[in-house]
Image (tube, rainbow, N blue to C red; front, side, top):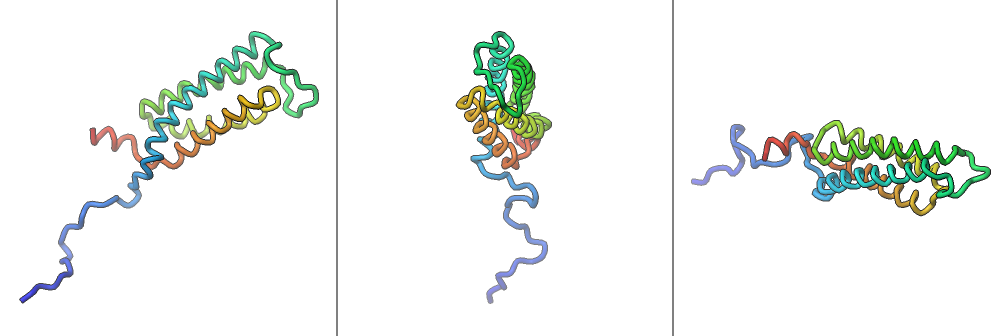
Length: 154
C-alpha cells in the first residue's frame, strides 16, 4: 500500500539558511560596498575640509558665541586626521577586512558627531556628511554576510 509521508529521522532536509548564518538583505550586502566607497569619499572630503581650514582662516565663517568653539585651524586638523583615518578604513572595507566593519561604524559615528559640532561653520556640507555617515552606519550594521564565507565560495 502507501507509505506514510512523514520523513524518517535520518532523512536529509533541504538546504536552507543556517542558524546564525543569515546572509541578511541583498540591499545591505550591496550597501556595504557602497558604504566602503562612501567612507573613502567622506575621508577625502574630510581631508579637503581640513586642508582648507588649516591653510586659511578666511574660508570658513567665524562663529562668535558657540559652545563647541575651536579655532578654524584646530577644526582643520581634526577633519584632516579623521579624513585620513576614514580613507584607510574605507579602503579596508572595500578589501573585505573584517576589522574594517567595526572600525567603520565607530569612525562614522565619530565623524557624525564632529560634523554635528561643525554645523555652524558649513551647514550644508555638514548635513550632507551627517546623512552619509548615517547611511554608512546602517549599511555596516545590517549586513550579516561573513566576508570569509565569500572568500571560501569564490
